[in-house]
Length: 134
Image (cartoon, rainbow, N blue to C red; front, side, top):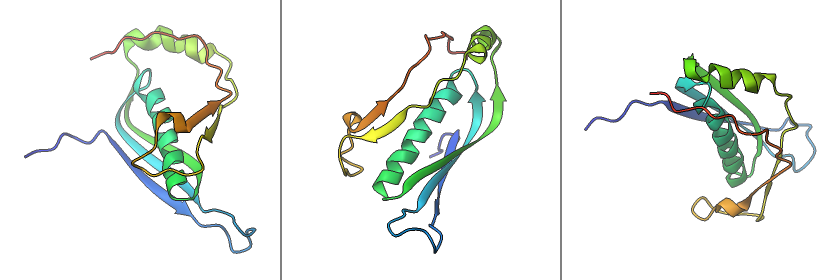
């Protein structure tokens, strides 16, 4: 049996608090994600959001604080039919990042629900359409 090629790989890293940190300071969890082939118009924005959320979920499950998401791209590319839409996005003024909150104080990996994730302050720009290029 052969496995499909790996397009995404992630690794988590825990930074322990310094010895002089206040009592109760949690370790910090960071995620390094490698993406072999990166469609900058459609795939990368989705993966940024997905892996940032995954980092927060894993941090919650491991009683650490989510810290950094680092993404390394292999073949980063823009399809010709995405150029106009990406130019629209580049011209937009960035808005403040939303805040992530949890509905419940605790949950397990098997019982997390979409309703457990509360995103506050998300103010999106109007959508910019791009077709899936193959």
